[in-house]
Image (cartoon, rainbow, N blue to C red; front, side, top):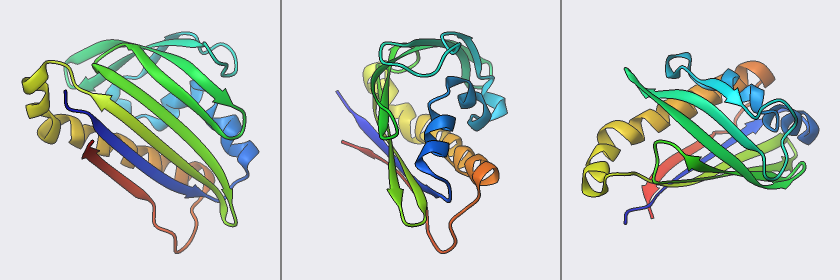
Length: 165
């Protein structure tokens, strides 16, 4: 069983409240997801985030491949972090932790995603040529969109890595 981990950090020149208000609203996920992914919320985004919330959406991870994805918000600590876990979808495991931390420049957003691909060895073969590249593109798009919406912190580098764990 091969597990992978994506880690991403981004600094934004905004307050914790501004970051939390934006990130804890499920409807905003569509704004920070590339258009080509065909992201569309089906249900569950009609109220602010809460523990136990189920969100259903359609996503196209690759051209001509559309899938239903169902996540549950399993942990919420307002202004600090939340966790979403896939219940049904394209991954064998998807556990996504979103952390916010106040820093002198504004807010540091950190994402830690532990995931496993389906289909055993065949899934592992697709990781470097399809999945890893796609996740990089998604998080690079998100970084640019958040910078466009909220600005950047001069002289500070953002961070993105994907590795086996």
